[in-house]
Length: 209
Image 1 (cartoon, rainbow, N blue to C red):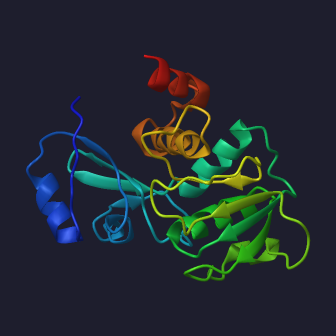
Image 2 (image 1 turned 90 degrees about the vertical axis):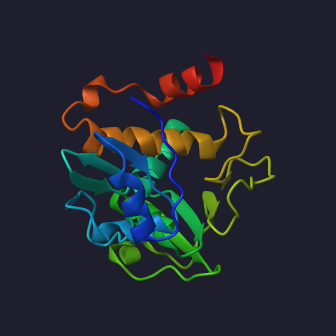
């Protein structure tokens, strides 16, 4: 196996980049490609309400995709000891990540307060979980720039971004590990979830090796 990094700003340049690579490919995709990649995916293993894809696999010439934003967030929140059911999450933002998280949060029985940000959270199956009163248990600001951290000592505030100063207990780092484990479970090693390491195991090896 060999690690690669691809920089592309549209789907055509991305396609040209991977055409020259031999063998199977496993990639984590980010903006703007995550919004266009569905055009070339053969098999998408994500709910139809989620329009973006952030993990892909090319195997034997065919491309498979999955979005792990929502499920990765859920597992990260569970990892820090929070039970999702009836927990109130305030979400600021309305992009694809917000949609994925709202969808999964609602699916696992959580409640949602929409906070107006740069974009408004669209309507979807998560509407049944949206409340207009109550006090939030967790606050998630998805309008933060990449690498920006929440400077607040309260465990109520979550940031899914991280930078070079982030540590093993930072939520953004925990979530990115969780997202990649979900990708292995969903498309890279289907049926082998019982053999995957835990979030704690991966974190400890990332920071202590």
